Length: 160
Image (cartoon, rainbow, N blue to C red; front, side):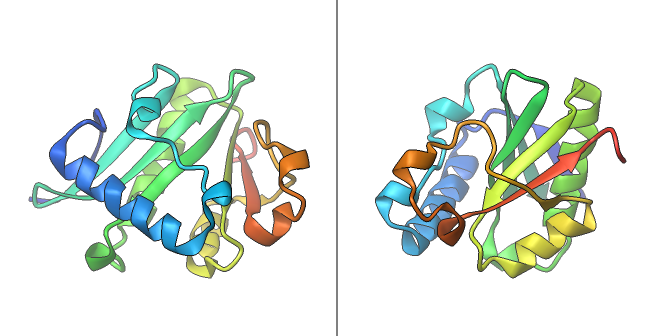
């Protein structure tokens, strides 16, 4: 079976296990007050599109796109199972997300990432994401050193 990437419900055993892996990884990197992961219920909201990547039928990656209500959307919970990295799954997920975002009519996609996740930044840059200021939804007063914990990037969908 080839790699497939489809819009699916996050409430599936294999997906939940992957999200648990993603959560454990984020918790190992950040203190609780700096973890801004969407929980399972949040991923099921109508303003969220959730993709699942499967390789030979096994869940190997996922990603969510959250509508901001102003024509923009934010990438959340992008994660590829560690044993499946290096196979182009992240690139395939991101390409599908961008294609679908254009179809959905979004003008801009935002994301935030840890400053030390250089491989992720390189992937996003290959797709045209550029560093940007913090986007809608960040509580700047509660995060005094925001750029120490997050790198913000955006992709203008009208420019590509």
